[in-house]
Structures are given as C-alpha cells and as structure tokens.
View 1 (cartoon, rainbow, N blue to C red):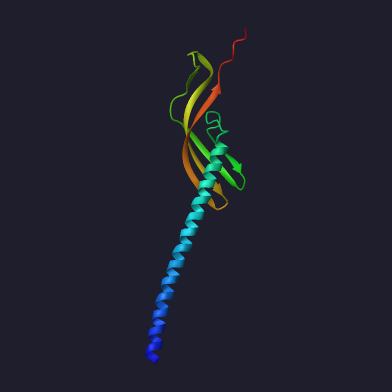
View 2 (view 1 turned 180 degrees about the horizontal axis):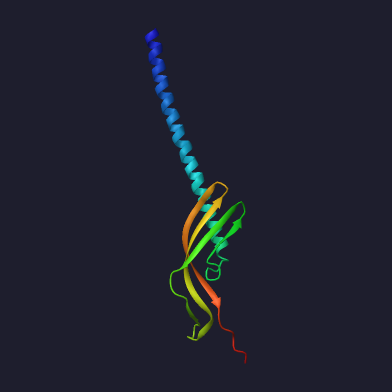
Length: 130
C-alpha cells in the first residue's frame, strides 16, 4: 500500500513538472509575441512620423510619439545633386538620398530599431517671373 502511494506520487510529480514546463514555455512565447507586436506597432508609427522629416534639413533629431520617442540619424547615401524636371530642365530643388538609422524608445529603453532610406530636398532656385 505504501509502495503504491509512492509510485502514484512519483507519477503525479512527473506530470506536474511536465505541465509546469509546458506552461512556462507558453508564457515565454506569449511575452515574445507581445514584444514583437509592440515593436511592429512602434515601427509603423515611427515611419509615419518620419514621413514629415526632411533628412537634408534635419539630419539628426528626435520627436515625441505619445509615450515613446523617435530618434534618427541620417547620412547621405549619394552626393546631393540638382533636381531635374520631367522635360530635363533644372528644378527648384537639390535632391539627396539619405539612410536614416532610427530608434524608438520608451522609459524602459529601445523598443524598435531599423534603417530606412528617404529622399531629402532643399529649395535652391526661384521661379522666373514672366
């Protein structure tokens, strides 16, 4: 009778340990999925904020984004060149292509980090008045 109770306790213990390990793995997977979803949402929001940034005029900076902050540092990928209209005439702008290194942070640290290329522009000519 005592031996049967010990065997039953051993079997119960093995099952309980297995269930605990399985539950722990599931909790970790859920936490990773939540962190990934938070990172994706922060990346999408940061891209929306950066749509208004001209990297030629503001190569480095930060902007608040709710409780988060977007930080960027842009470097020129190609030299700045004169813009050209569709008919081949000089445009009003000089153009450049920039690689922006972006980080989204909150009070706990970095949420997302990515690199995006974006065009920069600067008006350097005036329209001729007739």
